[in-house]
Length: 296
Ligand SMILES: [Zn+2]
Image (cartoon, rainbow, N blue to C red; front, side, top):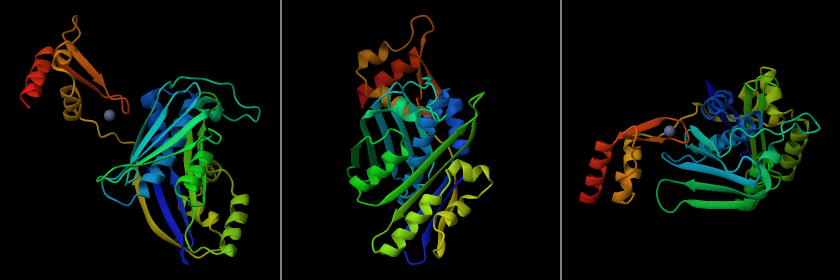
């Protein structure tokens, strides 16, 4: 089971959140049939969304991350709630690209660098807050860092990693680390954090060594007294339902609803883009939905 932990230094100057998202990314790969590079891009975005969702602290709040840099993957989307549960979608999941010269998956090449990262925070009431930045690298972690610096003026270090098997592209490990400098942090704390960050290994390397997410936070905050704010289980979760699909169909013009059913099979199918679940409606059911919609 995947977990997330949030820690804070005892002087309140630095926050660290670490996540093991291995199962989430593995689930996303099985649902979407993503290629290795598609898995890495979607997995990194899901990991970031989960951490950012868990930081919303308001029940029912959600965060949506959307990135499109004009690369062959198209738009990559991840949505998470305030418990860190997340779901995601990639427009062209099967795109394959050659590895970069350093042997790593070419996430920036697949995402592209000409476009924006959009972050939508919906607190469940009032207008959702939307922030967007020009893509910095398309590697996603740097783009999240830039989002926090530009859009929220919070100095942030973000590391995201997805390790896939070179042969069968199975997800081996995935995780992330988010470090933030809080208001009131002094120069000594910041420079100590910078020294720690320079020595940090990639998150998936630390997970592969068997380090817990708490130990990852302790390593990132070495030299500081640290307290755990919270730690909980997270996962890949979709909130789609037949009811929601009916509501979406009801919003269509009546004559369009009546032509949705396939003439040969006699029914219409709607597939959830986040979890792949299929909802089937017979032409009789569609007539009923159309009739209900015109009554409302
Ligand atoms: Zn769904």
